[in-house]
Length: 309
Image 1 (cartoon, rainbow, N blue to C red):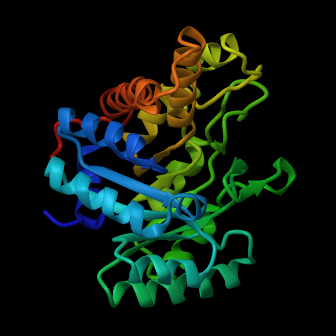
Image 2 (image 1 turned 30 degrees about the vertical axis):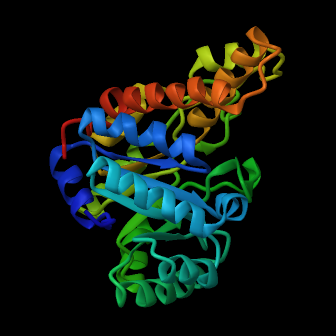
């Protein structure tokens, strides 16, 4: 089975009131953990790559790893560019075999965002690739994406119809209170479901995306802190809020920080308990298993996409 795009995935997800997990990948162990979980749970899957991941691992290595995952699992897998900030990087990924790209021009004015997004959409659609764009701005830090709280902005529901019609975009990432990174909220998270409901009314059956949707599971934060870390106050989005969003218009939920925390916690624990070990296979094997377990949990209890292949 070749790589697929997300059109059919999102159609089924919208109709079935669940969301597809979009998990960020950087190396072989992360890909294997994610794909093993999805295979066991019979879940469709989006593997997504940031500009930072492409720089770290190189495009060709990531492509070959994802192609191996498709061949090994037989799952419907889409390969997605996360937070492409220019036409050029989107074009490079499209030409290089990605089946989905995100153009994030949300730091520009509304009209500039429209024009840049439209340019990417025209190039992508001619080649059978789907496009995600962003309207509104999430606070927080993820790779090269850094937005302060004062520069963050909720998505304006009154702009969504015009944006989608003018750009022809296939899905829309919105800002309703999620945040990139592990240090998300000073208090309890408050997602603006009123904004999501208004957008769903204006764009019926249109796939919506949530970024910054890791839950920052306390056991991994505690494990990191126990073995030499310093992450006081790390908080995420409660999983019940994400499940509610997945039952509405949200068809894609991005998860990255939870994977990083699970992997790092596992490696720290293993090396603390086995200080004389130096074989990467020894500490990366439990790290891969930690990735698998957190992804299985998300597929079943947050996204609801298990058994949907």
